[in-house]
Image (cartoon, rainbow, N blue to C red; front, side):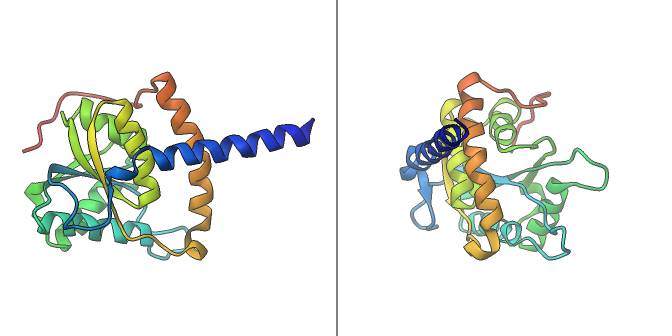
Length: 204
């Protein structure tokens, strides 16, 4: 019985994974030239420094991608969305500081301090910041999940794929992503809400 449950569980994870991957392949772009323009780029947050003290390459590559999109004129503003629930941990402010260092003007950067999860970031972009279309900025596998959420929210979103890291470096993240995909499908199916919403904020 335990073996059967295990097999069913593995098959389910693989099916959810394939569903998320195949849902929005036409909306993912790795080329600046090919991606359509949007007013706002939604930059999905992550920690800058890992527990071992090293720089998080996922973070660095997302900052680089967002700055590149802005400088190319493909987006006019950046909404940096991340976690700020603990004292001394502030992803949005850190992203803003590094975006400014990368050449993005401060007045072109807006912060969402309640982007605790990808679902929160995407839904709040519409419900709080009034965006019905935007460009999601993260690694390709993360963009796939974000675009699935956007679909269920009737948001016209595309994804710009930041540079990814090697499988040797990121295998733990990719393993967690398989499970996150199961959760996101269940969340959108039941209409899961963000932890916080709030007063409307107009970008630009």
